[in-house]
Image (tube, rainbow, N blue to C red; front, side, top):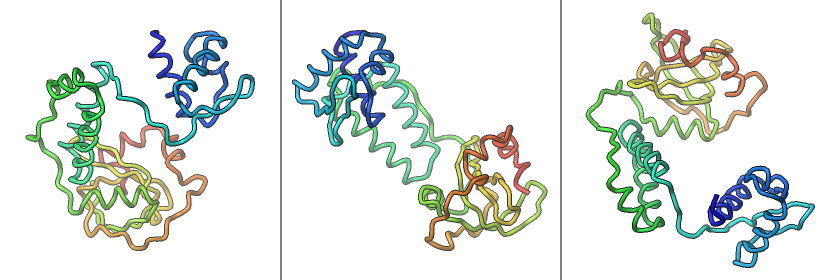
Amino acid sequence: MRRADRLFEIIQLMRRRPTVTARELGAALEVSERTIYRDIADLAASGVPIEGEAGVGYTLRPGFDLPPLMFKEAEIEALVLGARIVESWADGELAEAATDVIAKIEAVIPERLRGYMAGTALLAPETHFVEPLGFDLADLRRALRQRLRVHFGYTDVFGQTSERTVRPLSLAFFGPVWVLAAWCELREDFRTFRLDRMRGFTVPDLAPFRPEPGKTLHDFLKRPGTWTRGAAGASDG
């Protein structure tokens, strides 16, 4: 690893944790603690706001901005393709956010990489089929983010209808359908719901629910095969 790359990685590792020791940095980067001490000193001398000392640990003060971003070609392709998929398949609000992210990245990377980014030949065409929704997906994303219960009428795979109030836990896309994982208050258990089978979607109140043991996304994911059954529409009864 080039020294410049190692210095960049040190900053990235420090961003992820409130405090990190020279031993931990050295182990992650496969260099000696002495090398880390020297790198930390050089970073601090160049103006990077690092606090701490040898033997105790180091902290990167909040608000530090890195110089122009550097990406590998494969990293640029991953960013562009991911953003184009979001632009093509997600709701308008999220699609606009993906466009803004690409614009921000283009504004801070070097000119050479900017040209490569603009010419990346990885596409997500808009000519595809998505099951239409009867509500704005952005409203459900906001409820998910703010931990707000949602209410909707639902028609299951057998054509049976019901009214549901659920705690939204996660969204997943199984083209051409979106699936919501939730704690269902009617069934008092986890359920998955295809969004295209919902009607009358509302957010009945603005009081966030509190995560409870046994009712969280972590608990849902511990159940084998839950997403698979949900994509097929078999666990939404």
